[in-house]
Image 1 (tube, rainbow, N blue to C red):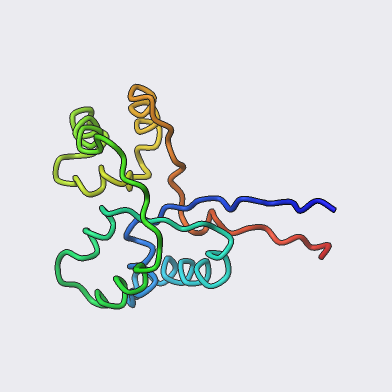
Image 2: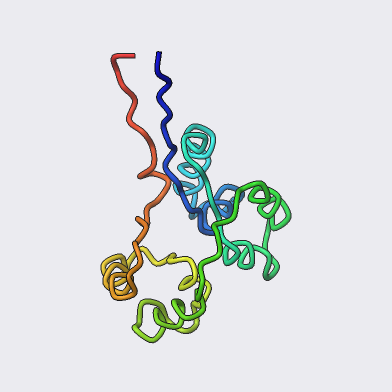
Length: 146
């Protein structure tokens, strides 16, 4: 008998996921509900990762539920540090992938509206490009035959 080992897909979380999980604003109700549902039903199906940039962003400033959010992400493993990350971020800024005022976003590719541009710039750098998606896109379809 052979044991089949399957690898979970890796999912990098930017700061919006833990922030939405604890958010209470009515204007974001749909996003909050989707995030909480995904977290409770689907997050165990993935290897979750965050970055130092996300931890730094979550640690800065004063906002509601800050302590809970930081505690929420405290057990999520960190992405390995990339050599020359500062040079990559500067390249993004110089090539208008991200504006200078959003250096945190440049460090963790949080702008989903620039997917094509990010792929082109990463290609020039010889880097692979992660997919930028929402929790809604990470729900697995249920097999109705089970």
